[in-house]
Amino acid sequence: MTDVAEAESLILEHMQSLSSVVRPLSETIGCVLQEEVLAERDLPPFNRVTMDGIAIKFNDWEQGLRRYHLVGSQGAGVQPLTDIKNSECIKIMTGAMLPDTVDTVIPIEQVTINQKNVLVESKISISKGQFIHSRGSDRKIGSNLLSPGNLIGPPEMAILASAGYSKIKVSESPLVACISTGDELVNLEEKILPHQIRSSNEYAIEASLERHCRAKVTRENLKDDPKVMLKKISDLHDKSDVVILSGGVSMGDYDFVPEVLNKLGARPIFHRIEQRPGRPMWFGISKDHKPIFGLPGNPVSTLVCLTRYVIPGLQHAMGLHHKQPETTYLAEEVVFKANLAFFLPVKLKAGRNGISLAHPCPTNTSGDFVSLAQTTGFIELPRKQNRFSEGTVTKLFRW
Image (cartoon, one colour):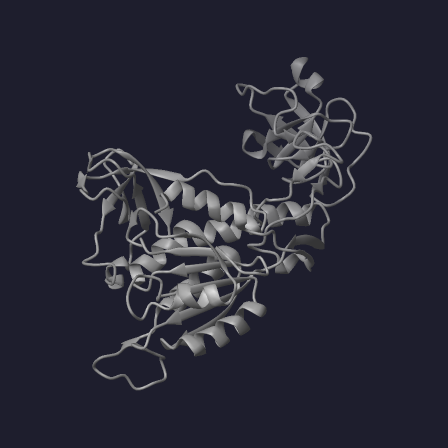
C-alpha cells in the first residue's frame, strides 16, 4: 500500500495542466490567474490625502505660524488648486490630490475655522508630509502586482480593476464527471425501499468541487453492472477533464470499478493508502492521460479523500501556487492504535488564550456523515504513533 505523502506526490505528478481562457473580469472570482499583472500607473498615482483637514506649507509651521488664511477647498477627483502662498491654506478632503505648493495635512479636528481665518491648536505636534500617501509608495508604474498562479479573490479583483484589466487570462474551470456506484443507491426523485439509501456522495463532491475549483460537474448514478459501467464511464470520460468515482473500489464481490477501469485502458498509479478512513482509494490515468479518482463509497471516506487528494490535485492542474498546509493544536489527547494515518474530523474553537484548538468529532463509522455537520474539517495524525497529546500540532484540512 501507498502512504499518504507518496499518494499526494503521485497525484500531483500525474495531473495535467488545464488550458487557459480569457474572461471578463466580473467572471473571474475564484479563478487562477494565468498571466502577469503590471501596474498601469504609480500606486497611488498622485500624492493622496488620507485625512480631512487643511493643507499647509510645513515651512510656515516651522516658523511658528498658527493662523492661516483659507483660500479654497478641494475634494477628491478634481484638479488640484495652485498658487497657494506662504501663510495660506486650503481645506482638503480624504482621497484628494495634494497640490504641489503644500506638503502637510492637519486634521480638521485640530483646527478652528472662522470664515477665511483658520486657527491651529498650538499644543499639537505635526510632522512634514503627515497624512499623505506618497505617489508610487505602494508600487511603481510597470511593476508586478500579481503573478500566474494567484487565486483571484476580493483583494485580487480590486488590484485587477485598479490596473485597468477589464479582461484577464485565467485557468479553465475543470469539467468533472462525478459517478456514484451501487445497487443500493436511489436518486432523490425515486421512491425508496427499506433496503435502499439515498445517493448523496455526488452532491457533496459537487459542492466541494464548485467551492474550491469552480468545477463544472456532471453527476451520474450507476448500478453494479460492469457492462453498463463500462459504457457510461467511457462516455463521461470523453466529455470530461477528470473522472471521480465513488464506491466499488474495495475487495468485495461487487467492487467492479478497478476491473472496469482496466478494461477502459486506464493505468493504475496506486490502489489503497495507509490511512483511515479511505484506505481503498484508487488513482490512475486513462489512456488519454486524464486523471481518474476511485474514492471509497462510505460518505466520510469519500469526503476525506476528496478533500485530502482530489481538491489539491485539481488546484495543481489549474496552476494554483502550492499552499503550505494549515496547522492547528489538538484540544485533547487522541489515542489511535492502528498503524495507519488517521484523518479525524474536528471542530475549531478558540481556547482561553484566543488560539484556535481542534476538538475531535469522531464519527461512529465511515458511513456516519451526519456527524460531520458543523465540523471545520479534519486533522491528519501520522502513522507509527498511537498517542497524540493535548497541544500536538497537526495538519488541518477544511471541507
